[in-house]
Image (cartoon, rainbow, N blue to C red; front, side):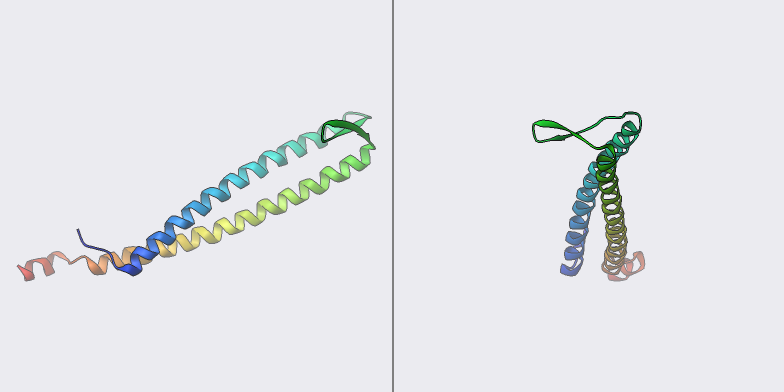
Length: 122
């Protein structure tokens, strides 16, 4: 087995770091998606009732329905924007990972002697 160059080794390490970042981003996005579903569900429930409550710390406080809808709408917008940002970051990371993977494969092909070269050296 041939040793890979230091440059290729560094690229492989970068790939591993990108993979970790992608996993972390995926977990964050799943968390945001869960929160978004909860907010959308709460908005749906608010429409069905005349009285709205919000939990603040350990207490439940009655709030005007419009105020709570506004707060939930703002939270929904924030969560959606955050998810879009994460998706863009993930796309950039995937693109960089593909580029690094191609470079590493090319480097390895250059370092691996072909069958003809092996025969000539024998």
